[in-house]
Image (cartoon, one colour):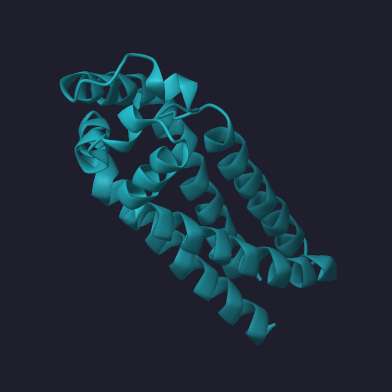
Length: 172
């Protein structure tokens, strides 16, 4: 189960990268997004009014850190040879894969998701925002290595590491 534990620790680090990057570059992304909205003639403060963030606040911190803590806990149990580690790993690892699928889907459909969220508000100003340009402006404020390199590496680590964990579980 050592291989599983190492993979779980790598997965934990992959999830920790999310709030770290958002903490470091989120303010610049927010400023770029607001500048794009200004170019589109949208009033200042609309992001805050609708809870849109690019920093490490809220669920952008507690969700990935919770997953990282869970993966670390499972790794510790597996390194210790605790039988509960194997049982809980089956559950936890499946949940991590499912969560990462949701994250990947969200990344791939971000513009449509933002457009749909803005349309649901009933605010005509929000409904006319070009979400693709808005999100591209925000993404452009992150260093070039973040998107797609860090993002894709994180997905590869989570999915590849999970496969290693499942193989280790089956071999145990």
